[in-house]
Length: 294
Image (cartoon, helix red, strand yellow):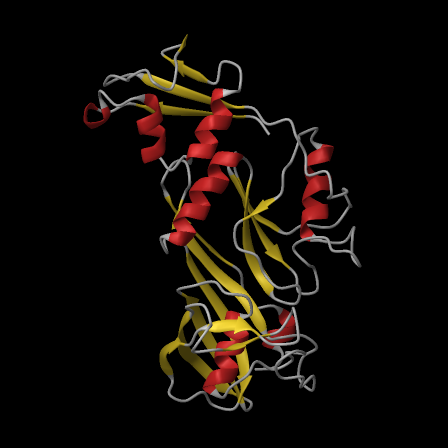
């Protein structure tokens, strides 16, 4: 996907090599190496420049990203997409429960990635799938997808620096107590399975979840959870560790009396825009199947 990004050089940035400037803007070394190979990818005041050249205050630096490749293993499929926001750099989607993020061996054509491949093929645009916050198949809610290599790299770096706030809503049976707190319990793969995870204080990876009880109704707790880390099944395992597993969780609490999937929803995403640095915040309301429990 093609994208032209324009920067106006400030007095504080004067004298920087273009490569230095772009790294300060979050470009990775791999980004810079790929952009170097693109024709006329760097222009300053309309003239071709090299990465080693320096910029001056008042210069207009233009970076022209040209991507023609597509994700070859993601066949386009016409799948409805609930697009919350889209610009030249990112697309934010409210994913329904039951729709996987990626195609798999047993589900090759029905995923969010397949739907996006169709969406951009209709526009005649190449598309490489770069999802920045992956959700489990049965988790609903917001996910952000980068539209080119630079926005993907910047969002990935933001995730590592904990600059992306991810708030989830979950429902558990019973009244969660204590009503707020932090769960700090490392996670590891459960022996004998490639899917399930478990608490492992000796060999597990660092995992931290902050939670807060929002309300207690009809024998159920609606809980807000913010991730400090993003391990596989982190919220599902941490809530079970607390003693309040999510209802409908077929792996860790197969109680389908109230809902047919794990009651987990990606409710809010907040982060600086990867290119403009403007504050972005998106919310997705609780879906009907979770609302009906409360």
